Length: 73
Image (tube, rainbow, N blue to C red; front, side):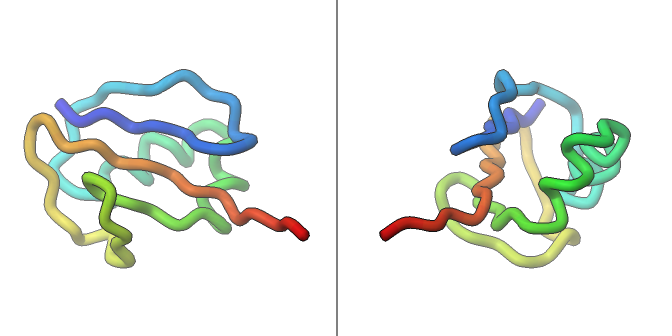
């Protein structure tokens, strides 16, 4: 089981699911139309390290964080 956390303005409770790669996580999240829009723009961190490949493998206990773009002044 991996935990998915949604940071910033995404406003969703953490989600726990079975996934062997980030691609599996993306497929589950794309089923939610609101999340599908966020996925296009979010950075992704695995255990607090930014990653860019959906082929990144996951293991039980991993934490995946979705980081939406932030603007500020």
